[in-house]
Structure formats: C-alpha cells, structure tokens
Image 1 (cartoon, rainbow, N blue to C red):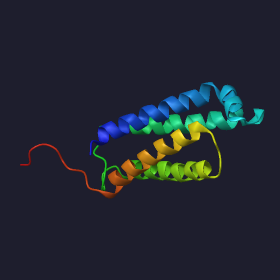
Image 2: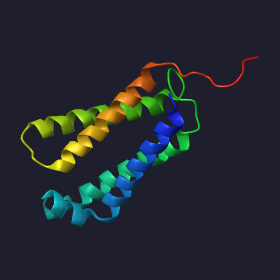
Image 3: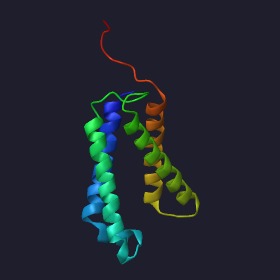
Amino acid sequence: MNTKLLMSVSAVVLGVTGVTLSFFPQEIAVILGMGESSDIVLQVLGALYFGFAMINWMAKASLIGGIYSRPVAAGNLAHFMMGALALTKLTFSGASLDYIWVAALAYSVFAVLFGYVFFTTPALSGKSG
C-alpha cells in the first residue's frame, strides 16, 4: 500500500478541517445548531485536527506499518476507528444530516486503510543487497 499517499491525503483532510474549525468556530456552531459556548470547544478540536495533520504530513516519508512508525499508525487507527463508530452510530440514530453521512463514510474509509497499514508489514521497495 502507498502509505505516502494515505498520509498525505489524511493530512490534507485533517488540516483543512482543523483550520476551518479554528478560524470559523462561530459560523460552524450556527450551522451545527450548537450553542454560543461551543466556540472554544470547536477551536480546540480544530487545534487537535491540525496537530494530527502536521504529524501525518511530517511522517508521510517514513516507512509505516508493522513495527515501523507504529505510534503514528496506532494513533491514526484509534482516531479514525472511534470517529467512524461514533459518526455511524449518529447516522443510524435518525439524524437526517447529509454531512454526517459524508463524515462517517470518510472516517470509515480512513479507519479501514489505517487498520490495514497497522496490521500488515510494509513491502520494502528497491533492490536488496
């Protein structure tokens, strides 16, 4: 599997989400129907997403999978798996919000891909010897 592509795409998705949450918390709170006091929570969540994006971006050139960069793979797997489960549960609870389905699908795809990376040994490219 091309982990450089996976890490790059996840870094971009998380980075855009993080910057959006950090700079537009009030607007997003209105869209999501949240109260005014949720601004700081959305900004902290944006910082978390942006931090994860930076980790993924900086680790994209590293060999990832098996025992290599295991903390990075484990962190991504935990984040996307738990997020996918929570979002999927929300979608089946009767929430008729289209963006929740999109987020649940995106999280599920990333969870499966990072699960594959975490539980398999990467193939080394190049000639041996």
